[in-house]
Length: 365
Ligand code: GN1
Ligand code: MG
Image (cartoon, rainbow, N blue to C red; front, top):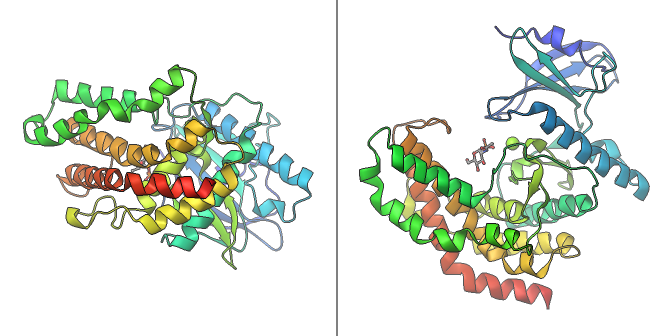
């Protein structure tokens, strides 16, 4: 059974009278609608949260509330202008519970409502200029959260834990439900030959040398709002905001932004790590994040750039072996093609690592 949208909207304490409700954006995980009101009252964004992926909706919304109210308080203390366009605002329910999500038991659906940010745009394409802005903005996002005192939960447990992702791959290989393991021996050999170096983060963390901080964990260019002049307004899509190594935000942006082709492009010989994007993003990121980053975090930025294509290859290959149960596929070999693409990117990052180290050292000099 599907939810009645007007009935859902009525659960939230919005201002004004609803004029129209229309689908918004092209997200793969949540369903999103724009709720337009009559006249000058704010418009809203209504979202159905995918609770099959985000199983702890209560914890997830608590994370988002903690993060957005912390950022809002800081902006207010700084006397910043235009605060409503610089941080998301979630609408509470009308029932006085203070909750910012509604569970529709009949349809087994979770909903939330936020204020629509007017006169803002998102970008899909990464240029050196926009990646510098993204680096600065994601670094700023982390910087503004270093002193948050709320305990955040992992909205997807072990999301970016490389040891855990390798364990999932080993389990897939062991089970081999589709008989696909025999055809991916070379890919598995490649992956497992780098397993030790790629799990360095977990070891550093256990040794007490590497902290977890509040990270965004889905740092794509399209998760950022810009004003009409092209200035960054704010970071959006906060479902994956959770404690992680800063490698998550740095590495995952470069995984998507600095690949010369899309992550599922079958032209594997065209996969290449784009050093122009790397330099611009790193400059922006260090500008806003170096005030709090530890030497161990900065030293390992090239590792982070390699870690994310590697982790994604592990995840895609495990899904391929398992019979494509997690990622949507458009054709039977899709996850295998994605695996090849991400492994090629991983090797391109390794080839560029000495140059990356030199660049980062020069930034700090
Ligand atoms: C998923 O749906 P999307 O593209 O935002 C995945 C990411 C992967 C990405 C690979 C919750 O993100 O971790 O990097 O696919 N998100 C989740 O395309 O698993
Ligand atoms: Mg998104």
